[in-house]
Length: 138
Image (cartoon, rainbow, N blue to C red):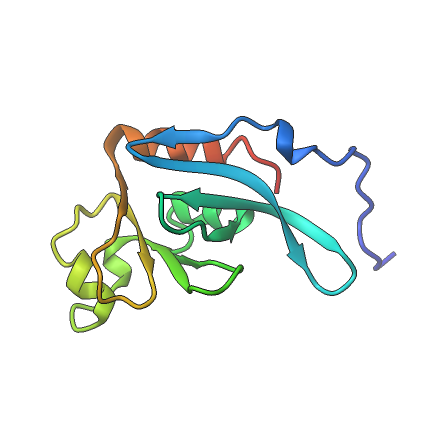
């Protein structure tokens, strides 16, 4: 009665899902290990040529729908944040890079925050990323 709901669907082979690409950024759905028993959940790996942080699909879906302001990667280091500009305080290290960013833009910031972001999704790239993320399993 109070147990977990069983999943009746077969797990999706994440390697069969098409990656997303735009403006020198690639994203793909990858298994994200959770816990100690070899369990995984779907993750979104962003690759900009230098780093490849992985974020939980569920969080990225909430992020692109504005139900979440910032997603933090789970495969550290380095720590990375995918965030909307309005979530960065003006006097914070992130605020320095996002102060003049368009309101409807997602930016990838990587620790340490002394260097400018290499990924900023806006306009058609942001729209296609949002559509792609919503095709992924949670």
